[in-house]
Image (tube, rainbow, N blue to C red):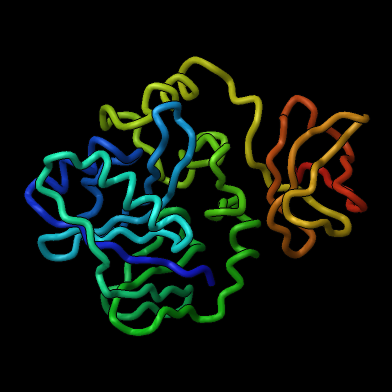
Length: 245
């Protein structure tokens, strides 16, 4: 499982600070997890994470690879707001079997099970997470989600990761325009695959680039596709790829 860092945000301005930055409405933190992202002003992905309330603070669950950069970005936005950002000293436990006391459902999809935060070592219950993600086209930090990603092309609306009624946040204008004024021509899709190819392999059809192949599991995969070209059989190195329907 990927390493996660659990940050603790505290201070009188924490809620208003987060509400003005992230893609989702933080009201859902009370008694649950909120899945959200921080974007650039141009609407591109910087980090995705989970938020939940813990006492008078907020826990933020983010991939270890993004944690330092996220803390730096949050600190830049903080200015004089009464917000303290620190490591929580907690670790992530997750699974799809019986949930321990205090575990919270993963808000992205029912199949993604539960997440819990405690001083115990980081752990999971042996679930094949790639199989679940491929079946439900759920992107992973650092694999399908990269600095070139737009969250609507990455399926954040279906994953409960964006709220279009919450008001302004960084990158909101671009995201709202993609939602209301354009038809998405590119995006992540589940595909069937015969063979295999490395993550990041270019997908081609009719001599033209169609997209990029990502996570693969059980004869299926997640691919980022230019949708107007993604018809019939496509090639990713020696593998044959087609939309799953």
